[in-house]
Image (cartoon, rainbow, N blue to C red):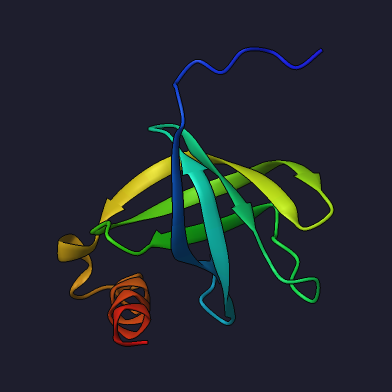
Length: 107
């Protein structure tokens, strides 16, 4: 039996980007639904979501540090561990997230 979610999820069908913690690799995903605490995403068969990653979502000005909590074929459940406003990432070690978000918007 699956426990009830604490936060209701909203269906979205948005584009997103999964980014490895060190920024060395990223790949696109489709975000099916999202809540304040997490998201359900789909990725291509060739891509595997790591246990700990960042999620960038079109239309959101934040990066989410996330942990993968479940998987089913190409579908993944992510729980948000940290919310990083992109405006605060203009410099420092995580500025690559802001740059990737800008590139995601251009495509």
